[in-house]
Length: 32
Figure 1 (cartoon, rainbow, N blue to C red):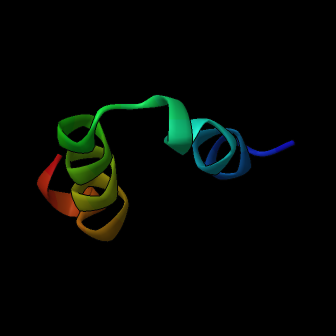
Figure 2: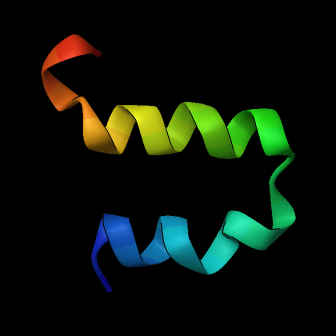
């Protein structure tokens, strides 16, 4: 299982803020 798959598997357990942060990081890897 890749890291991205692991993240998506646990998204439901995260708060909305954590989801926003993770999605931003995944969409903007050069800004992290």
